[in-house]
Each structure stands twice: as C-alpha cells, then as structure tokens.
Image (tube, rainbow over all chains, first blue to last red; front, side):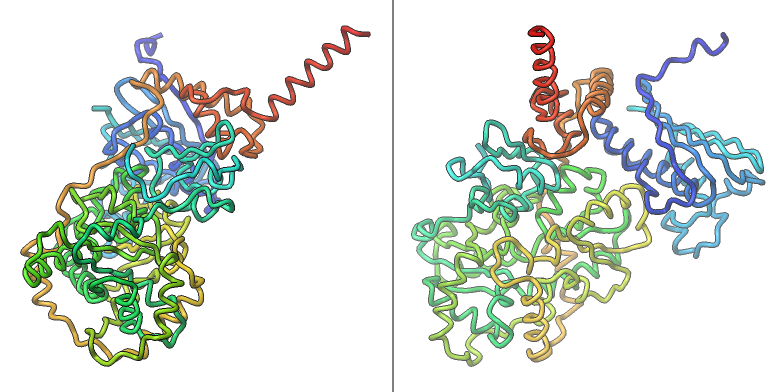
Amino acid sequence: MMRAALAEPLLVERFPIRGGDYEHGGDAAAAIKSIMRQLGISPDVMRRLSIANFEAEMNLVMYADEGWIELQVFPDALRVVVSDRGPGIPDIGLAMQEGWSTATPEMRARGFGAGLGLPNMKRNSDEFDIASTVGVGTTVRYGVHLP
Amino acid sequence: MIAKGHLIDAAACVGCVACARNCPTKAIRVRDGLARIKYELCIDCGGCVRSCDHGAARAATTPPSHLERFAYTVAVPSVTLYAQFGRDVAPTRVLHALTQLGFDGVYDISWMCEMLAAATDAYVNEARGPWPKISVTCPAVVRLVQVRYPGLIPNLLPIETARELSARLLRRRLQAELGLEPGAIGIFFITPCTAIMDSILSPVGLEQSYLDGALSIAELYGPLLRALETTPEPDTYLDEVSPRGLLWAMAGGEIAGMRNTNTLTVKGPDVQHVFDRIEAGTFQSVDFIEAYICPDGCVSGGLTIEGRYAAQRNLQHIVKSLPASPAIGEERVRQLLREDFFATEEEITARPVQPLGRDLREAVARQKKLQSLIGQLPGKNCAACGAPDCATLAEDVVRDEAALGDCVFLKIERLEDDLRAQEARVS
C-alpha cells in the first residue's frame, strides 16, 4: 500500500541468463540496446546503460548459476534489475572499492578490469543499489535518468 | 533524390530477396516485385550489388563521358588496383598503363597511406579518450557508426582519408603547375567498391569531396590488361610506390605500418559484433582499431576482379620485391598533424534510426505491439514477404509500412481456414 505511489513502468523486458554461458554473454545487453535504439533513447544514455548492462551480464555469466536481467522503462528513467542465484558477494564494501582488482595500473586508468566492475556500473548510473546474500545470490539495481 | 554510388535497376530486378537477405543493416525491402533501398538505413557497403545475380543492384560509378568535361584528367587508383594483375606486374607499370587509357596524369596514394600510418601513431600518442580510436578508411564503417553506433562517433579517428588528402594536394599542385582553374582539373578515383563512390557523392566529415568521381577497377580491368601488353617494364619515370602503403589494400595493412602494437583489425560481419562490445565499454585497453566491412579489406571490394586470396598473394609478393622505402620523416608528420594538415574538416554527425514513435510513450506502445506481432509470425525468416526476416516485417507493420497479411505463411493459414469453413458449409 505504501508503495502504490511509485510509478508503474511503461515497459518491462526480462532476459534470462545462464551462468557459464560465455557463448551468449553480452546478448542480453545487446538486445536491450536494440530496444533503446527503437525507443529513440539518446546516445549518451544508451552508452552509459549499455556499459553497466554488459558488466552486469558478464558478472552473472562468470560467477552465478543462473539469473536474469530486466529492463524497466519509466517516463523519466531507464532502470535495470539484475538478479542471480549464485555465490553472493561476501564483502560488498570491498567489491565496491574503486580499483579493487588485479588489473594493471594502465588498464585501470582506462576503466578496465576493475574486479567485478561494480564501481564502473555505479559510475555510469544515476541510481545504484546492491544486495547480496552469501550462498544465495545477488541483486543489483541501477538506473539512468532521461534528459 | 540524392545521387548514390549504387542503385537498383527496376527493369532488371526480378523481385527475389537475395539483396534484402544479404543487407547487414536490413535496409532493403522487396515490394510489388521490386527491391527498394531504404537509404536512411543504408551504409553503402555494396552487399546488395555483390549478392544480386541479375545485375539489378549495381554500382553507379562516374560515366566515362563525364571525363570529357575537364581540360586535364588524373586517375588516382586505390592501392588495390596494383594487386589485380598477378604478382609480376610492378605498380609503376600499372600506373603507366593507366596513362594509356586517356588520363592526362596518374597519382599514386601509397605514400599518403604510409604517412597516415605515422600520423595515426602520432595522434593516438597524444589523444585523450574515448578508446579505442577507430579508422575512417572504410566509408561503409563510418556510415555504420553514424547509423547504428552514434555513441562511437567520438571514437572515430579525426584524420581525413588518403584518397581525399591526395586529391586536395594534387589539385593545388596542378593549379600551380598548369595554371588551370580548379574546375578544369578532373580527379578520378579508381575504386574497389561502391562505398567510396558514395563517399564522393555524399562525403562525411567533409563538405565536398576533392575527387570529381570514381571509375571501378572492374570496368578498367579489361582496357588495362590490353594496355599492359604494350607497356614496357618502366624505368624510374614515376616515383617508386611505398611498400608499406600498398599493404593498405588488405585488412591488417593499416596497423602493419604503425609503431603502436596495441591495435587490432576487424572485418566483415565481425565489425558489428566488436562495435557492440566497444559500445558496452570493452576494448578500452586497445588504442586503435582498423575496421573493414568487406571480409578481407579492400582486396575483397565488390568492384575488383582478382579474387581476394590471389590478390593478397600478389600484394605480398610485390611488397617484398620492392626496395625498402626510405623512412618517412616522423617529425615532419607530427608537424603536419599539429598544423591540421590531416584533420577531418567537418564534424561527423549521427544518422540514428528513426525511433518507433514520436515520443517515449508512443514508442513503448509500438514496441509492445512489435513484440506481440513477432509472436504471431512463424519465425521462419523466409523473406518471402519482402522483408529480410520476421522481426523486420513486424517492425514495418508497426511503422505502417507493411501489413501482417504480407506473411506468406499467415496467408496460407487464412486460405486453409476459409477452405475448411466452405467445406463445412457445403456438407
């Protein structure tokens, strides 16, 4: 009842993802990009959300058993929910640390190889939230506001 | 209508769907037995020309009679031309044979290619992101970025192509040397593909092309072969060509001449796959990407004659048999780069696909309708309706450009239903 005030999304599209399915890794992010293109979303918003989506999708493929990525289109924002059944993240604070990674300084300078890529996802979003339970799974929510 | 370097000849088109199915941006529809190009989606790759067995989708290069309008004509061949005549015909001999076809002059661009490799090195060294930088040599790749990957426009290398820079330089030189008006000098590219013809007619990053037109390698091949018979092995009457520049005819040739090794080459259908990844933020650790729409670079252009495998063998041999070119002055190239000698003259703008609706709400409503239509279609992607696949037909229906009833399978289903209903009435 308290939540009734929240606006309903105009469009919801969910894409299932299998852990370990490297062959199709990135397909969901590409499908979401194609929807954004048809909706006339600006290149900048498309670029930022695509970066976050791709990181999220590859995390799921690399670490989780299975899950999904869901695009929610609101009048004022595009929001994405990524949820998985998997190992979970024991220390979210550490995973969210910029540069928590084994990547070389040069790679890091270009925003590459930053561990789980969570800081990169956050950097490219206007909203970001993560919840994880070890042994159960992880849910990441992020969004980009429409200009 | 805008002039195009490729078109569909209505009289020759039989209404098959070969071109529509082979178009990488799904820009062709066959309606009422005739293929039509939706030019707003077209990237000028020439895939339709290549796939047409009826000569209907064809190149529209400059008519030879057009050359008569100029007091002085120069042929500027793509370096791909040198790979067309076996491994033992030296590039200088090909250039000399060209002069016998009636051109007043010829101009080799391999040196400019080599200089551009050095300019690219220098630019990448000093540039800021976004990474990777993407080559603009293939005009179809540039169009692809404009249409499908507008987010990658800032990644495009802001350096003009070797053909345009050469034509600009040449025109100035000839004006000074011959005392001719700029308009009296006709500079014609000898092209391996339709995309370059398109880039001359409607240039990107340039207000007007410095080239006056293009003739295809294919149409000059026969006359050149005959001219070569009477062309002696040349002395040094023409400058030697640059071996490093010759490599630009093949995918990988552009980066082969660079010092920077943090580069890669992508070609053919892989280009879209890699661009999807770049747009998603991967490949940021790469400095420079050389990309070609054709499967092996320019040697596989649709307007060439020698097969792409043989052409690459020819080139490898020719490159190794040429004397090593003297090192070009890298400091001089850096200076020219600072003086904007190589710079793209105009900003490259996006040509994004028309959204499904005028605003977000309408677009979302149509997106939902699109999904439901895709569910109603058989998913066989037979293209008999004239759209390349079921999803594209669904999109055309949503855009009011086609009807769901255009689907042959749905049509048969409806006819069978009618028949059953009739039989039921009769019995």
